[in-house]
Length: 255
Length: 176
Length: 176
Image (cartoon, each protein chain N blue to C red):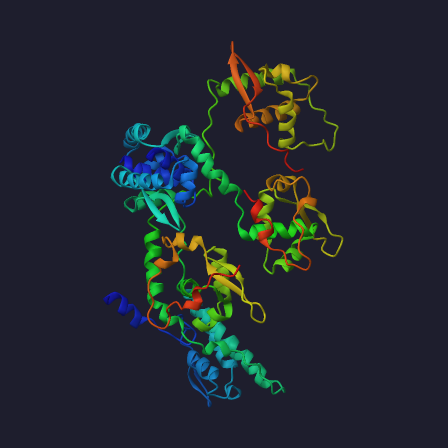
């Protein structure tokens, strides 16, 4: 209780909310006091703003910005809001029209933020407590991926199959300026159709002639199909054979 | 049962409801509740994790005893809210759905900057529009708000001093 | 030791090296290795999680025995669309091709976030640019959209009541 009531007593509530502007003191014929007080009396129509020169206040604010603003951005911002309000209000007063819009009618409504003080304090405590808990973010690692079961196949088996495929590949033609590119999902469709329920070696699956690039695309698509369960691999006598997996392919993705 | 719950809760990055757990594990909700109880107390004894009820569901998180080594590894960026953001958030939390003009009037300062910050942090969201002239946007708090302050639901908000208490008409269902 | 390791590995979400674990827990690497061994075998006995060594580090993941309930829980989460995404999607579906500014003006809220989400889920796509100043991008729905809502083509979209505003409810029953 003690710490809470102390915090309540210490909280400086200004008409600008819980965050007080820096103590900019204004001295002129019509008014003498702080920026915060000026803001209040202008809002309550208790003073003729036309009698208060705003230029010196702006200058004092700039001086404050140069000297101390870095220390407390919120206070500086609050002061800026108050100044902007005063300037706009005065600008309207200087216009010939008699109809000054009522700018701050809703400002009179109760209750004010002071009554949320206890809640804000509690939220602060909860915030600190919550910082001691850590959840799995899921953000950094993207979608959670299920651990994959590929049986007795090792990455080395896959690499051997790929190597023998590359050995057969033709060099890529260099003169094409803009080779047509397939998306991986299109390539997966092609590879899936080449697969059947009977296991075949990679050599049998790919029809000559093909370039190295095509071989790479083929192999990447095959790996992706294995990953999503639409293809499976098995080893017989040291060679890898591929067939369609249990999972049916999804609808072709939009192109 | 406890093992399956652990696997499922681990994989879910969000609080999981009893209903969704029951569906995933294909058992009755009552069994899930029993399982959660058992699993929760087993964790408390043997594990560096704990089971919490947060933002309307169950989720695994680290036991606060280990906050220090975890923070050392993760080097999390503290995203503590400034006082003025907290004030704005408290006003929204207690008076939702609320318009920007109403927030301004409670706080006595313009709150558009604060609201934008809170929207960006996904602590508040637009929940509809009031059917008064100008159709002003209404704001309310999010699941993320509950999560960030380790609350299960809004009824856990601290009780306010007289005068700022939730009014009946403040509790009308949000217009969507 | 095992408990602290569990907390740290849980929160890390990425493979953690023995060195980084030693630094976080402020112990020798040898002790971490012993701890990991002990922790790994405890997990294998009592838990739905397992410790795996990948990419030069240790990481927790679910035991594949529980792949089915995990997939059941995660799948609907991925597909569930929030009301605001649904609303944005409905606007695109009925008014396509449509620019972002037009979507904003129909919905009365900024929709860039929603559109980005929908693009990521491949429910909408860029279909071209309008030949007006600024050449704004035009959005339309995808095959995936038809598939997810079990439609053969766009003509199966529910007919809107004349003059009626678009409502999310039009699409709600078809989701999931």
